[in-house]
Image (tube, rainbow, N blue to C red; front, top):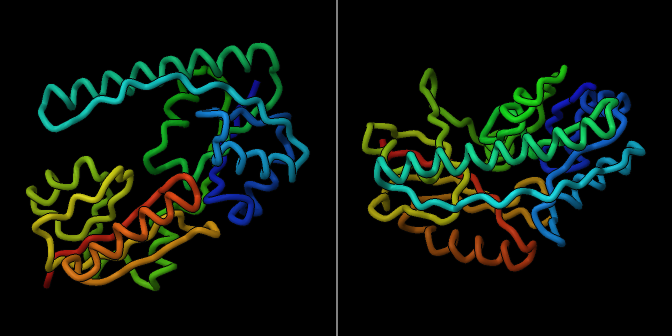
Length: 241
């Protein structure tokens, strides 16, 4: 048995030549099915169909949605994620034992950023490799025609859940992912470059001073969710000079 972890950006148009070649070596695709009308599963099917690959859809185990904020809540979140990963490992092991061969996992964006596929595959105990894809921060920078950091400076990649703690710790240039909601109160003078559903036909962009564009972002976010049925957004947040 072999597993190939392949970054596919935001769909078939982002499949690199390297990933395309890898897909030609695979026997089937394993994909989590989160619901009956899972748009991301449908996108994976489109990619798999282009290479003549069957998609083995595995019902995604339920995850305990734990709120965070205190140390105890953060610990509970880590436990909930660990339990979820354990259930995924068991489900994927069953498929691999039954089918053997070479299986592909098609990772949205790039496997290196806020994705657990590599961690899960490591625990499967099979031979595997990883190929990169186009990431959300890359798309955000390209769409807004910006560099994510100043000359010789750093960019801090984080999640919306950690945003306030990171700002309190002194971070002033942050690329924020995994945002269930926008929490930008008190940051009116910061600059933001925001995008949702990047790389899709429903892509939407907003940029400006937070105090000036927050309403426009919230409205665009709601429209994107209504149009596509889901929202994946990412933004660069920078403190005033």
